[in-house]
Length: 249
Image (cartoon, rainbow, N blue to C red; front, side, top):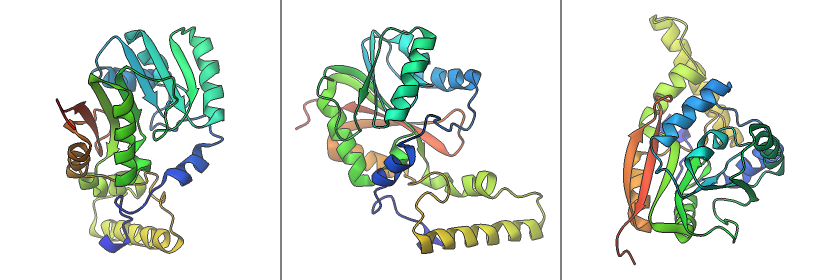
């Protein structure tokens, strides 16, 4: 079945993901209540430096951003979806937050007014990238990032744990019996084969999966040091923290 896995090295999902999210207002987190949004945010705040300027790429409706804002002097929240930005505006007004600036843009073409950023967050974004897309995003982020700044690519789907996700989330087994495990494997086989035939790159609800070595290689190419952290609330995802190498280039 390995040949039926779409490779993150060859498939860009950016156009498809933009079409998918164009009219959405819900970020579709695993858990979507406010207490869970706050929990997700507390994890991200443990990774990000406090103070200064934060850039949130792919902010969506700012469900997470609103809980991050108080830790920073200013927050640029960027998304390509007008419906998401409209929902974000309503949420920011409801929360009475004054330091979030909403802007239209993408991870590969940030708004021109953004410069001198201390921290960049791309939460749940990398899974829509090919390796080329990831390189372009890192280069664009480096352009606006201070020399001592940090980029956090959060909740990156871990290629090494893809099977765990398939067998616990996509097609969970109802029991531990041999017959049930066979049913599970057969169901996965059929779904993956159908996705291969129809070229459905989002069949598993994720998109592209990355190994930790994929991320390390990208960091090396663009001139970053990278640190990998396992996600608190997703056992099949990790975070990548990029810091510019001194005197690179």
